[in-house]
Image (tube, rainbow, N blue to C red; front, side, top):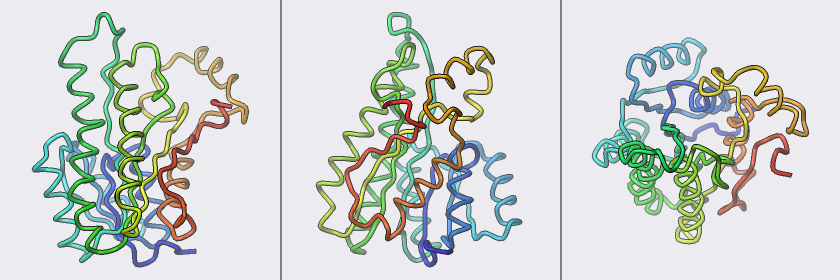
Length: 246
């Protein structure tokens, strides 16, 4: 079922993990996809892989913390596809440390990528989508937005993304644009592979569905929010955590 047929999408942080899976699911559902990332080698590898699987995928190396880069990314998408219907802000980094030990660069780098980068991509995208009279903005936040030990910088950005999402939803709803946030819980990604097995077991024990999440869980949620099935949903924050927050 290609319920994203004819739609075009930009996915930041699309070279691996959640971003890559979103690109794959969107492609499977008929969308034309532009993925961006700072890791150019991985970006090329993922692009080749997705094209080989039969999806229409383009790539654009981009550092979302650079405003000119972000603006050029959106402009390239419009020039390449002739339209931009969906923007998924997925790019993000971590620089974990206890608050009293966190150094200024670690704080600033995470804010610049995870929060300011979302703003940098949303602004030109929304300018275009307002003229177009249609758009879907999907921002990847985190359940860490409620606070997490050793992640003052990361938690602050993910809480900020929620506020940014809700504000945008109020500002552009009348232009046919929806803005929503997805908050992944404990996910099976490269960032969690280094966690000791005993710690993982304890974390899984706290999840009602009894397993950790997968990138596909997030990708399927993003696909729903990008579709016409979610046309009356905006300003929402969806926890995709297996019930961890219940």
